Length: 193
Image 1 (tube, rainbow, N blue to C red):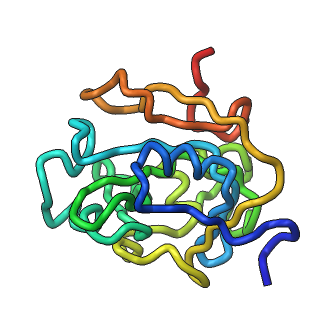
Image 2: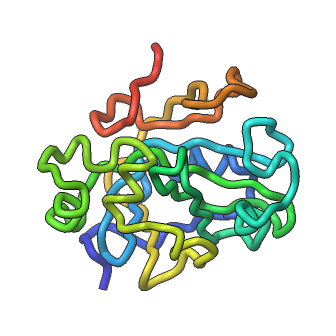
Image 3: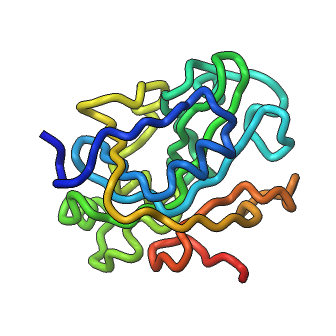
């Protein structure tokens, strides 16, 4: 049984280029152990992109990004926050999509307890907040995106997608590989008009 009427399993081709997958994920519902919401912001990364963790090749830290598509890559940002990515392209290439923000729709009480706050707008607005709210840590690294633990659903109101520069990087800053739902109040940061 699907968690919300009108939602169907999403058909995402994770072998596609990361920018295509990042754009396609906007408006899709992500559930991790039944907790989650509509994806409203993503960023794409690719092995040929100097801002990517995979640009210099495989390491112990980024090995999951070189693994099969449709798996999770989790890394620690600034030694503080876990960040969740979905691996794209063929195994061995090193590409993925960073999940930057969700509109919380499922398991809000669980997310509030994990984050220690009540404001739904701030529960998943940013990649570190998102991972914490979903209970994602390094133990999720390398896991496949498949039911019942990780579910992607589509349906409901289609999202109007906007693009802009990625956040918090110092290389390839002009690459417009940050995608978001136009007008969403759940974004980590707004898009320039």
